[in-house]
Image (spheres, rainbow, N blue to C red):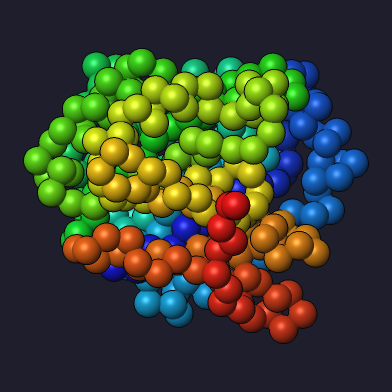
Length: 302
């Protein structure tokens, strides 16, 4: 099975947006876009990626969040239109939110992401949480793999991008992991925030997944599997040892990012998985001058 993984599209659309919609955290986000981010994130790169994926013999696509910049409905509409370029059945695409998709409390409370991406969030297993409106974990059973999508996105104060799964979602995940249809397959876990990352404890508190240790402890019984994430705008892979084996922990860079460093330049990852486990892991890096992609290995964290 071949899985394509892209992340952090950061698609911006301010069409028809009233000024009053910026009288909250979006103001700092908009200023950031004006000063820096708007010049380095390019929607055309994401469109090139969707075209390449349609030519790459891909069985499933995973998108690990930050489809939008400011969680505006116009941005979600743009993201839906761009992902439509994949020309794939929603059942073969797994999408989870990032912190930018829950940029404000209003977007979070209205479940804007869940509502606008509903067809991509249909689970093959019964809803595992007691919250009637919650849809995560989303489970898709595909051949030898069980793809499980989590939401680590919650609204935060300005300049804070930390993630949080929360006890209800973790409890639901425990039930999913214990399901026989999941246990007999290779787990592919998708979320926006990484389980482990470099930097100080303060940096991890501001930007990382605050209940990462709880999730890691739940994954300890596994002897094999794959955890995919975004958030760092960098492609990188780690091996996470468990008592009986190891998990591959792989991040994708931003699909729209223009950058001189090859571990950060826009592109997507491809994973090959069969009944034996996770096999080949590589990146397709975009070259805007030739409008082509170059295959490279995903850098290993040392």
